[in-house]
Image (cartoon, rainbow, N blue to C red; front, top):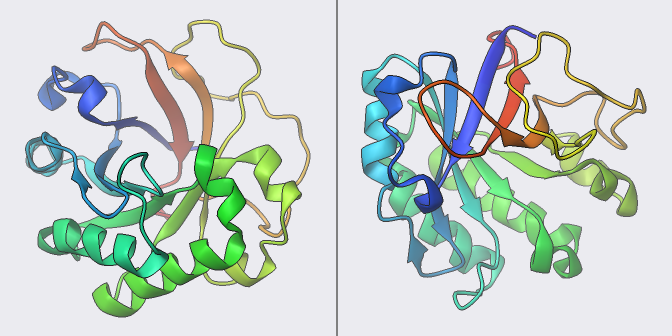
Length: 202
């Protein structure tokens, strides 16, 4: 698939980007809800760019204790993301408590970020969620970062990650395919989400 990537948040506060020689792009948590900001967001984001790696920045929708409307949460993310416009891809992390909010909430957030930044964001979710809702109104405008795991065994990057071979609902294919939450790679001692993409798509 061309590119190997990871995502990180404050849980990986001790991660040093310059040591992550095996990955090509890093997606850093920027914000959550309408008030949370990752305290190591700028450090990790700036280090990613300084190391010549591709950068993504994500917002965790309806982060517990910081829940807001789609517009409030989008504006909170935009304020943090603004210095990286033109340098990074924004993403909406859509999981857990957010699923009950419905597709319209996600689409409002995505539209707001696109309209205010001029950058088309993507959406992260699990593969099962692609089939649980009608995402056709989102899929025609916004790319997919999807997660599906074969198991929870430790693994490194693989040249051909496992997939069940099924389609991705309203999306023809994902921009990014995440195939483990228990990744182990050189440069960091803990577990990481590992995923794959292509430079052309990015």
